Image (tube, rainbow, N blue to C red):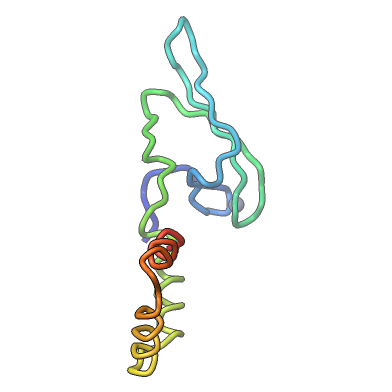
Amino acid sequence: MPCPNGIHCECARRITSFDVLEHAFVMRHWVPRFVRIKYQCPACGKIDEVTLDFKHWRPSILTPCLEDGLDDERERIAQLGPIDLDEIALFRADLGQLTGAQLLKTLEQV
Ligand SMILES: [Zn+2]
């Protein structure tokens, strides 16, 4: 189920902050009146622009939705299959060989 709020491309892909090329507030008499967002759709590559009334603007409009891509992620995890005991033992052995600094570096990359 797609997120109900947000900006959507013509191809129905939801636009998030990662896709924004330009973000500007249009001022009138020193008060923000509109929000202009220029984006490139990651699905179809189209570059487009929307202008929203500032009254309706919320930063969460561009926040990635947890529902987006969930079906793809479920399918990917299903294809990986269950984690078997050999994989757990290998992970534990690799984890035991890491130093504290290497472990922190690895966790920062996740
Ligand atoms: Zn698109």
